[in-house]
Length: 429
Image (cartoon, rainbow, N blue to C red; front, side, top):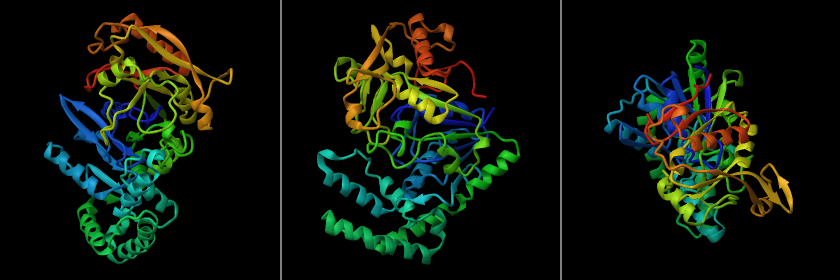
């Protein structure tokens, strides 16, 4: 199998975890390359649900190595808890199975405090962040004042960085947001203790990947969120603080682009998004409620209800271009079962003109009217289908419409939450 990058084509929550889990079986290593614990991947394996926030979902395979790249911002407390939960569930976890990049930045308590204070102060104008400190941590990374995993083993440097960080953060918390300040001592002690526990796992992930490539091993690159939450290319400012696009796999893992062979874009059979921001195909009627209930559309990290709407191919086509996608993996096709008529947005109408790409100006995007193609739905249960031929004709037509509209082939179709509830048209190569 080729080295494959898995990315989301919408606003996240597309079901990347299940596809990564499926492709892990044909890979030697899985590396996550951006984001933080503001994202969650949910998997159902043998009827048991697992939710991952930082650790790559490939960890459920006992013979695979999982790596947390330098492009992530990591809350060490959350990571340690996730490791403990996995071990309690019977998943063996040691340095031979999991690595944390020494260059990954650490989320600090003052990042979380600042994140929450900002959102509270914005009131109705809030961005809808998860309040987990991801944005402020990336800010410190860009400002060259962040704490990295390697710093956890250096008490003097760690204390110096935390005290310097608190001077600025406490000023903002107290003087601007009227919030409580934080003390350096307890933070230093806590992070040194967590650093000792994580020390066996902290390594040079880029070197590990280089050695793997030289040994002829296959690598799977796992992104978080979705293309339209990308800091540069998404619906700014309603975006995340990193780059979920495929190109970020190189910078966020420490590997050259020549080693990436196939990019799979995950597209949910309909569209969802969490938090604020324009959503051209959003459904606020009983159809939207039907999709929301059947799809169990609640955030794996926050539990927030997701907004639901028809599939938007304008959004997907932008993702094809931005990521250089080779194929699509359609998820949650089964959720549309029972709807008599389906709609796919094939373009926008703006000020009386046809628009085939998402406007950067959000006021213009909010003014867009979806141009729909209508397709008959199906009533049959498709969860047992394991081949395209086993799908009802209407479901096959829906898949064909996605392929035609996106301009690239479909390689995988998910027809249920379980690992086995999948149609593999062809494996990425």
